[in-house]
Length: 146
Image (cartoon, rainbow, N blue to C red):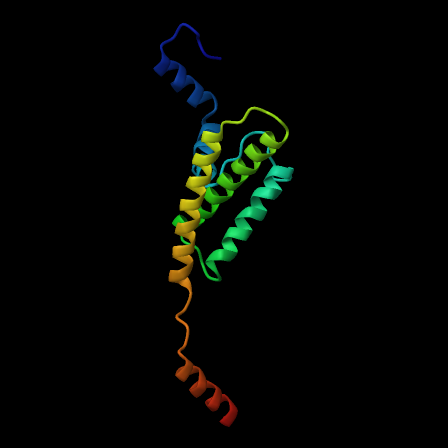
């Protein structure tokens, strides 16, 4: 056991000596833990709020179209889903007769609008350019002849 009167460097050295294998294991596992997304305690993703959040993300994801998302696109989707959830929460509280700051509701809605505009701009950048009418006619003739 450690001596409580010893200075901190001796305590750390004693703990390291007593639990050397465990300390090495914990420090090795630490990098793996920090790479993953952390959830607050007692949240397993099955609550009604978590399900609604995932549905919102999926809906906003559909705006971007098919393909791999960059980290910034994913962050925009998460932000839009959180803001949309906050607006829904404020509206429900207002409908239930609770005191709700309209300023907060308006500011959150404005922020969501800006995030959704960013998503729309990125979606436009990701979509392939549409063929002109002449290109479409040529492509159909080739398909019919070939």
